[in-house]
Length: 382
Ligand SMILES: *Cc1c(COP(=O)(O)O)cnc(C)c1O
Image (cartoon, rainbow, N blue to C red; front, side):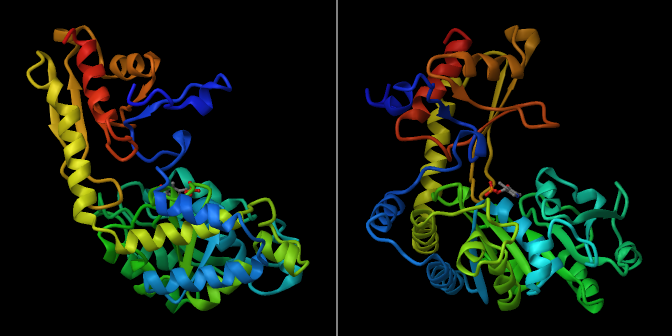
């Protein structure tokens, strides 16, 4: 291995550390905490702090760095989504805050485009909201949204994916215009929209009331998320949080979604580093690691290898591999499975709906790029 102590802390427990060639995924631990973050977290562990105060100051610091009116740190972007819907429904009424997830007497419907239903929309329901689809599988029009807004509509949710813009979805611009004309809030899931830097916080600057960011894409603990938004929306999100449950003695639904002081400080350090780092260097490093993974795979019969050049988003570059079963006797999935069953396990994946293996450099520690390339080549006897 790269280093004999690699993963030792996990092995001591009998758990198996893995090489992460699949990118930023929750299941493997999110992202690699950068040294600035580890150092900041260690320092935060050296003193206690009143968390209502820390939340406010950390939020102000992040809002300033990202150029949005206000910010709040949550237990992952998932919790930001849950707290935002709770805030949209209960506002600053403490009785309502303590009534959720029972929404009796509150507007409780969140509109979402049928085309934009996605894995994390469940997080919107957890505070008691009901998701209501609008538009069809094929497309969403402005009229669809106009018709869908009713007396119980509290917000319209939008899923922002700059990497793969959906030409048949209703645009965010139109969503904001129509929703706001009806006095309805707009919430945006922009969990991974942090690069190019102008995308970081962009949806709030466009006029959305709220957007989330996942710290798992930032070199921070993945147990943190950022809620960005208007002053009013962020203040109401704070009222729902675990800090308010204890500090204000108002029992909101955010209580089980704690963030520790070290994590809050770590997230601030991660955002600061992200906003000031040399991203050219980050991109060059990712590209280089991809080239290293590809090198031993070139010229293997039945194995097509292609670089991914997309630099939008947090996870740039990558490698696509297509294996021809007629030539190699293996399917793409066989390759993924064999890598995962090897020692140490190497995680790659065939994305849902795709017919190729995708590798990413995002989660590779130094030297692991070489190992990944060699391990794949070895499957084909090279
Ligand atoms: C990862 C992700 C989330 C959830 O974020 P966590 O910080 O893991 O809770 C939500 N939405 C999208 C689009 C994501 O990629």
